[in-house]
Every structure is written in structure tokens, then in C-alpha cells.
Amino acid sequence: MSADDAEARLRLDSYLPYRLSVASNAVSGLIARAYQDRFGLTIPQWRVICVLARDGRLTQGQIVGRTFMDKVTVSRAVQGLAARRLVDRSEHHADGRSHMLALAPEGRRLFSEIAPLALAYETALISGLAPEEVTLLRRLLTRLQSAAAALVGEGERPPIG
Amino acid sequence: MSADDAEARLRLDSYLPYRLSVASNAVSGLIARAYQDRFGLTIPQWRVICVLARDGRLTQGQIVGRTFMDKVTVSRAVQGLAARRLVDRSEHHADGRSHMLALAPEGRRLFSEIAPLALAYETALISGLAPEEVTLLRRLLTRLQSAAAALVGEGERPPIG
DNA sequence: GCTATATAGTTTCGTCTGTGACCAAATTTC
DNA sequence: GAAATTTGGTCACAGACGAAACTATATAGC
Image (cartoon, rainbow over all chains, first blue to last red; front, side, top):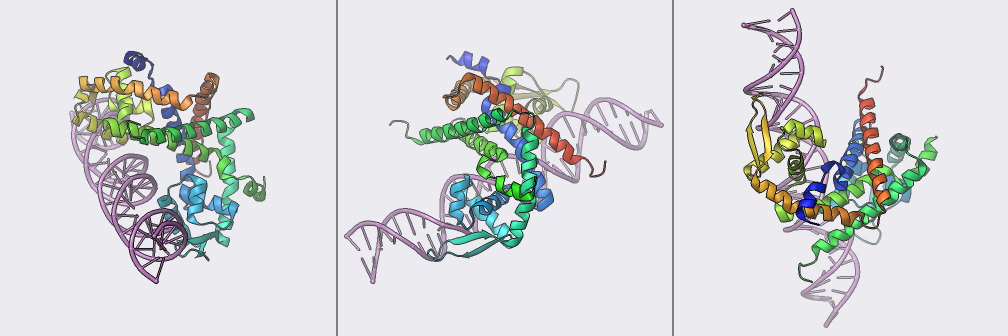
């Protein structure tokens, strides 16, 4: 493809990375505001709560492994949650560097309160989409994500090699 | 739906807003790094260049209207581009507060250089997807975006009314 | 055992962001 | 045509972010 072709074909409003970013910002902004305004939670905090609600006692590292969040992000999220007594941090029996995290009763209560709201948001967002479209959307997002991850790996390789 | 149902059904790894955010971050991170490392451009700057390359002379407000970017973001992007002489700012003939923006020759050259790379990234990302899947993906992203916008509007309404 | 290396998590630092205040020019209202 | 409002754009601030440095503990190699 020549550079001229590229110039002609590059339309921002149909450029997929751009479209993905705009859509994601719109959705995230909506949800972030809802959680912040009503419950004083950031999105990373809410994610941590979700994971703990589902999988029980975990270390921060395990949360990182499950969520694609940065470890700094998780660290800060947990600090905030622990300060509000929404999660308990207890010593790790076998590793002095680590802590076991679990939802405190108040955290569990909050999760119960927010979960229906979160699902309602999702339902509202995908209303008007056919179920098989939603399924496909999830699959396509996964594909894009792993393609991006693979390309990052490529970019890190030395130029000659 | 009861709160218990919601708790049981809420799995972060199939929650669409979460998946969208993770996929978008992966893709944006990839592209942001490429533009930053090779050309010293931020994503907002690159978007401004794209729009100007396509639509010619515009004000910042028109760029905001076309891109969903914040006006502060556009302002900062343009400042950087103008400082590097990639865009020209000239007086607006009819509105003293505003400026007409256009790509400078060096900006146009840069666009010609990056455009093929940008399209190559897109191609790599969607390789393995059928063309009709890509089309559908674009449609679904648009749907999500406007659904989110509509819900934001709802949230802003006063509780009683 | 003792040094070297790896890992869990935190802190620091520079950068990027959006919000809200703000300024100046334009437009509307009376 | 002066006062009030709106609009284009910038500034100042505070929050969020990630890369890299750092602390503390754990494991490996010898």
C-alpha cells in the first residue's frame, strides 16, 4: 500500500482503535461517575471488590493476575478499601511480604448493593443488541486484546532479530 | 432480579464495560507507545493531525465537534503541535477569539509517514477477523457509545422530574 | 550459612486528564 | 448602545496513572 492510499483511507471516524477508545471512554465515564457519586468507589476499587466477592481470599498479586490491572493501581485501590474497612488485610501465613485480602462485612454489603446496579447498566447498554451480537462482541474484544498484546511483544524485540 | 441473582451473575471477566475497557486500554497503549516513541506525538495530537489532514482548515471547536475530545485536550494538543510547527494557527477572519488551524508542510509530511503505519496497526489488530465481523464490531461500538451518552443524560436529570 | 537473585508491595516522580475558574470577544436583550 | 449572556479558548488545580526506584521478605546457588 502506498502512502497516498493510506492517507486517503485513514478516516478517524472509522479507525477502529479510535472508535474503541471513544466507546470505552463513554461507557467507563458513565459507570465511573455512578460508582463515585453514589458509593465513593473508584473503578479499580469496585473491580477489587468484585474479584474478592467472587473468589474469596486473595493476595494483591492474585488480583493483578485476574484483572489486567497494574499492581500500583491495585495497591492504591486496596489501601482505600482497607481504610474504609471494606476489606480486611490479614497476615499471609507463609509469606511475610504479602497479605490475605477478603471482603469485610460492610464490603460484602456494598457489593450486594452495587451488583444489581452494575448489571442494570450493562443491560441498558446492550439493550437493542441481539444476544448473539453481544456474544460476538465479547469474542471480538478478546481477539483485539490479545492481538494488541502480541504486537506489544513484537515491538519490544530488538530491530534486528 | 434479586440482589442474590445479581451477585451470582456478576462476573468481572464477562462484564461488558470491563471487557471494553481492558481491550481499549490494550489497543490504546500499543498505539500510544508507537506514536510517542517514533514521532513524539501524543494520541490527541495525532488525532488533531488526522482531522486536519482530512478536513483542512478548522477551528479548535470544530475539531472538538468531530472527535469527542475535550476542548482542553484539543487546546493542549494544538499548543504542542504549533510549537513544533506542525500546524499553522492564523487569525480567524470573523471571530477574534478563534484561530484557523491547518497542517503545516512538516505536519503533512508527518501525517504521510504515520498514516500507513496506523493502518498497518489496524490491519494487524483485525487480522483473523472476518470483514463482516469488523463491520459489525464498528456498529456495536457505535451503539454502546450512544447508549452510554443517553444514560449519562438520564443520570443528570433531577431525581424528581 | 551466606551471598545473589527474585518477588510482593509501596513510594516517588513526572505526565496526562478533566473540572471549574477565568479572560476576551461576540451576540443578545432591553 | 449599554448591560447581560454566550462562546472560544486558556489557565490552575487536583486526581489518576504508570515507570522506575525502593523496602522487605523469600528462594536459589554454592
